[in-house]
Image 1 (cartoon, rainbow, N blue to C red):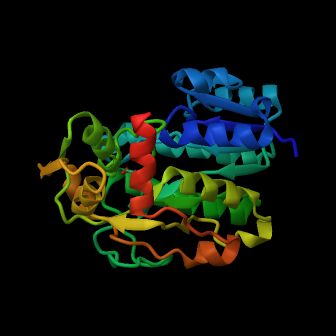
Image 2: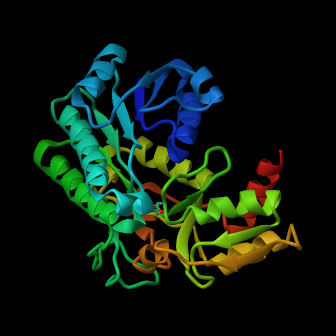
Length: 313
Ligand code: AKB
C-alpha cells in the first residue's frame, strides 16, 4: 500500500530508526525525513530529506503540499533533562510543533498524526508500581508538563474536530543506531558504549532508581502498530501507557557483567536524580494490549545482548 509520510525530527534517536523502518515498509520515496539539522549519512542517502523547523507552520505546510503528505510523525521534542535548563524553549518547541501539526490535520491537509508522549506525564504523587493508564498525574518537570498538556490537546482535537491523532507514552528507550540527547533515561544507552570502550561507567542516577525502559525495536513496532490499527480500535486519544521492562542502574550493570565481567560501575547522582524520582518505577499497559494487541518482546538480558553485539560491530 502506497502512502506518503512525513517524519518531523527524523534525525533524533527515535526518528532515525522510525525513518528506516517506515522506508522499509512503504518504500524510500514514500517517507520524507525532516529535521532542523541533517542526519547521519545512511539516513540522508536512503530517501528524501527536508530541513525544517517544527515550530514553523509554513515550512511544515509547504513540505506537506509539495510531497502530498498524508501522515505525519512528529518526533521533534526537547527531552526532560535539557528542558529543565531551557524551560521556555522546551515549551515553545514541544507545544508549538504539536499545534502546527494538529491544526494541519484539523484543516484536512493531512489525515493522520502520530505524536509521542512519555512516562514523564506522571509525577511524584503518582503510584510508583504498575502505574495505571488513568491515575494521579501532576508532572513536576517542564517536559512532563508539556507532554501532559499535549495529551489533553490531542484528545481535544480528536473529540472536537475529529483529528485522527494517535499516541503512546514511551518509557526510556534503548538503542544502538543513534544516541539519545537530553533525557533522564539516557544513562541506559551510554552505559553500553562505555562498557565496551572503557569497561567502566559513572552513572548519574542512584543504583536503586528503577525506571520503565524499552528496547528501540519494541518502540518502533508499537509506533507502527498503533498507526496501522483501525481507527475505531484506538479508544484512548490522549496517549496509551506502554511497557516492556523496568530495571535499576545496578541491574543493568549486572546484566552487562554477564558479558563483560570486568565492567565496573560507580554512581554520582546529579540533577537528573530528582527527575527520575518523580517518575513511575513500572507501568501497566493492558489498554494497549486490549485495544491494538500490543506486546513487548525485549527484556533486559535480550536488550543487553543486542546492544553489546551491535555496538561491538
Ligand atoms: C527522557 O528521559 O526525557 C525521555 C523520556 C522518558 O521521555 N527518555
